[in-house]
Amino acid sequence: MNRPRLPVWLVLFAMLSASPALGRGESPGCEQARSLVTETRRQLAGAEPDHDSIRWALATARRLCPSLGEAWMLAHCNAVVRGDEDEARVFARQARFLGMDPACPRASASPPPPLPAFVRDKFALIVGIGSFQDPRIPPLQFAAKDARDLATVLTDPEVGRFDPDNVTVLTDAEATRAGILNALQDLFVRAGEEDLVLLYFSSHGSPRREEGGLGGVGYLVTHDTSLDDIWLDAIDFGGLSRRAALIRARRRVIFLDTCYSGIALAGEKSLGAEPAGVDFETAALFLSGEGTYVVTSSQGDERSFESETLENSYFTHYLLRALRRPGDAPSLREVFSVLAREVPTAVARDRRAVQNPQILPADGPGDLRIGVAVRHANDGAGPPAGG
Image (cartoon, rainbow, N blue to C red; front, side, top):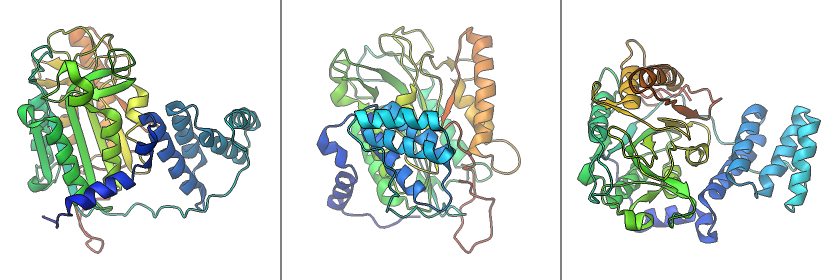
């Protein structure tokens, strides 16, 4: 279904106004930490806040931006409510050190409305990049195929139940920096609050380190990335997460099948100085409130492998298998349980290596269902959407 397109100037205005931290020159981690603090304030204003969930969100915010005094202050308040005096004292002391009064004001913002019990429409952006203009970047054998295979499953009317017109697939030469950002803008225009959005990226990544001009930022390597100008040609994960957060859909799931590794071994998603997967801080950048989940192909100190036998990456192969499960559409938690069980076993058997997918938030319900049938509020068809 085609919805009216907004003028470009309105899109740009909304994107800029929604990201005030851009003008302050903050790190991506601190920008995302502020978003988590804002979401926490809304939850605290609700009638029955989930204090365990709030505790985890504030721990994430403090880890992303240790200098954000408001995160320590709210953590103190949350510990007081939970009756944890030891935590409350520690958080209060740090809040004072950062110039915050650890008083516990009640947020004036109203809590967000509950997630709708249905999904009106579903959209997906699927990116797989195996060939690169810069000959120094090693090719990936199955990244583009991974993307096409996932699109096939998502548009299967018995499995993913996505309208093919709502699934954008960018592979190899199509997956330039401009092409990916334009596709994200299209999602910003088309997706509404009652929709579900899936983002999938399979490519090399750059390490999140200070040297080499990277400034402590990790990058998704696009088809037109030059290793000489990676900060200009690639897409930094902070900017990518900010754009993803602007998408209005209340249900979002982001799959990152990327890996950083300095050893260009055949069949490995590799780029960088030291072996490293998508670290916690980078994955957490994509969290933006209830209904958002991030699934990565490996932990922060691991590589992600491809398989010539499976003709996919291990992660994507078992993701496809989990989505094809017979019966009702599986929840994201059920999908992840397959990934967490099968990927490490297969990689250990075939590659004698370690690869453990991760999900954030780790303690979230994970009841979002990718294969849910779309329906309107008064339409009784289809399984529950999940949160």
